[in-house]
Amino acid sequence: MKKISVLFPTLILILLITSACQSNKPESISVNEPNSLSVSDSSVTIPSGRQSTYSGLQYEILSPGTGQRPTAYSMVTVHYTGKLTNGMVFDSSVQRGQPATFSLQQVISGWTEGIPLMQEGSRFRFTIPPHLAYGAAGSPPKIGPNETLIFEVDLIRVHH
Image (cartoon, rainbow, N blue to C red; front, side, top):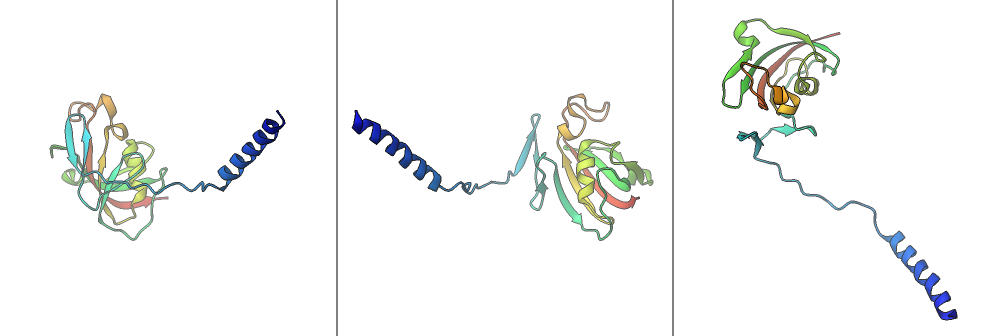
């Protein structure tokens, strides 16, 4: 019995010491960039040079800017063209010949997240998944349920 009472605490002590010596550093993780994003039975090709945010917003810098960056609460003036994944244009300030001015709190989440990545004078292409756009409801008649939207956006001005 005496051997067990000495052996047991010794084993516990050895276990505690060896577990304390182990590294808590995470192992490296290899992430493979997807070549396509599958969205409700259709596939959107993600071109090289496209980056992704944690939420799934994809963006590509077509032309960098040098001006101010907006915040998610800024008022901005932009020119944009919005397309469905099949290439159909559903809205375009460029075609109307009139830039749009709005608060980033009054637009779809993909714009609220994406526009602050830009600087005045830049042009980005955003691929916005449904959960950051109009979701299951869509925006009839032009945008159906669970549509991925593609926007080319020129940030003209950040208003303060």
